[in-house]
Length: 166
Image (cartoon, rainbow, N blue to C red; front, side):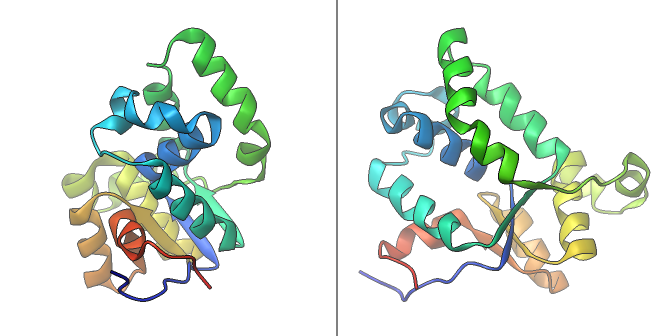
């Protein structure tokens, strides 16, 4: 059942699990059901298609170095040949993703570090400093951002729609 169409923000600031889902699915959608870091969430080929379309409507996709590091660490758990092939398949996508650097000092000075750690705090600060909507699978982070007036969406909200976006 549709709950209505969802339009992505002009700038999507993407968290680790949504980015990993996108990169792994773009490489080989069959890996979604077997790759340890993704299969836990039971994402399907349909979920990937919906999510890919959602991201296609965003004008800018933004990451922080912490997200890239986490994605790389998780993806490295693929067999070496698949990790290399996945990166090669996605290199054009990664080159076109914007990167926002949030200094260690800014992260450490932020109260959010004690609730969310380095990577999620970098997402919060990126949204505060550069605008955009955080896209995450982390409900706690999503709700916290919304309570601060920071645009945030949980990937599950997008997948629930199950329709094309306009």
